[in-house]
Length: 577
Image 1 (cartoon, rainbow, N blue to C red):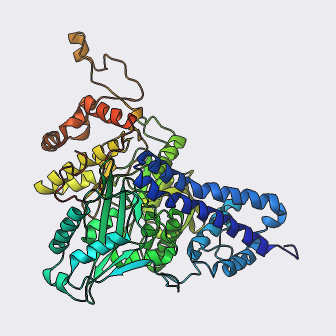
Image 2: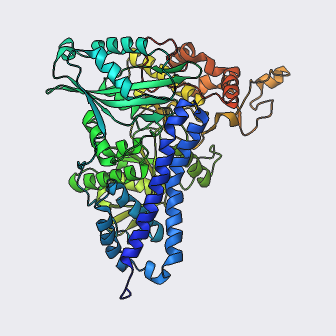
Image 3: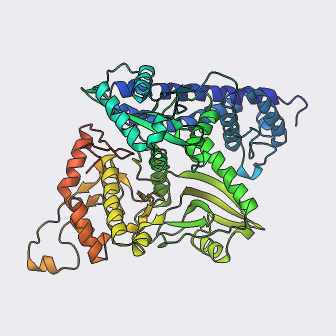
């Protein structure tokens, strides 16, 4: 290492790049209010994708600047990077987004060096930041104390949270919200003189909705509180619901949703606030839910290595039908699956490795409408050999030897995706009673329709490619055949020309690579005749090519179809049907 190695200058350039990223991130998020007020729904979708892409774009800019500014030999001397890390710690100690700055530093280091050189001495494998800390600064929340006057409190809330577009019927909304509040909470709570409502000061935006998020609490109890707002073009803003059920609020912040746009001056404090109202959520998921998905990866990885270090858990193959493209393994005590691409695909799969990677990356940037599991992509995971069940490791080495490598007492996973673990829908139905089967198939069809509304066609809609979450929602998780709905060509099967056509083993008509024949879905999706008949009753329109064409026409006309992440009590337009 050179005698006057510029560790402080390198650290400063890295943090300057981080400031640039944070400013662009803030500008995109700040535009969410105007997009909501002006009903710019397609622009909102583009902004969401742009914000996801922003991180890698800005990391690449900083790496290029480092290469252009510093001597290459010195810059890539890994022995000097503990000094850069130390200088970085001094610079970020005064920041309110210091935990994000650590993740940014890690991204720069990984962009410069091989993963073989990753160590806690050179980067932040373990954070140096206190967990969910508080700082002295302006409050991030508004607190209201109704003292028995719920209507006055609600009026004050909507005096504080205003928009440049008028509410369509605020007095009517207030009456409905008060009624819902009294319905949702025990009667004595509404009369408690110490009852308080605390709302985060910034409004959260996603897709076509705006959300006030906070909690209702007394000295002894608390409930989460979410108030969704909608802008009905030409009719003004309406208050759509009042949600105090923890499960419903958890679904709003689900791993199956797009990321919120929100102004967060002190990320750790806001995450701490969300963690208090959603204690079942891991902080990795909460960071990801507000757009800091790279830091979500950092928190996920730290939780994973902590779990491996402190339990006897060992990797096993995930339950369910073995995939034709991906091999999936899991840790029984860790609610995640790890997916790797096989070296050889089933002959029936007309895709290659590059296409699969492209499809999985696509999922990150589209609106998942609560029906597709978010993924995190990792390179060069290293796990102790002792953490694999022998059968699991043998299978991984057999199907993906280019990705899974044993190096002494370590297993190297060169490339994988992680997803939330769910119960495969086919396995769920095998053990379900009649009521559960009905609900699952109803939600399965709704999942397909809502994906279509978001311009996503799953391609392979087999039951095994969908999972059931702990909240009973059906979610798609196998992406190697997805495409935009508008790319598919939905057709009716032509009438046979002759009796010989009808009896032939091969189709008498041409089939293009993007042709889809919905009439063929029933036997393809359901071997069980009872389930087939039930699904036909619930969602038979999915077997009609004209249904799919009507959705394509709406999307091509620029319509962004409503898909709500919560139940809409008393609303006639309860979600897509």
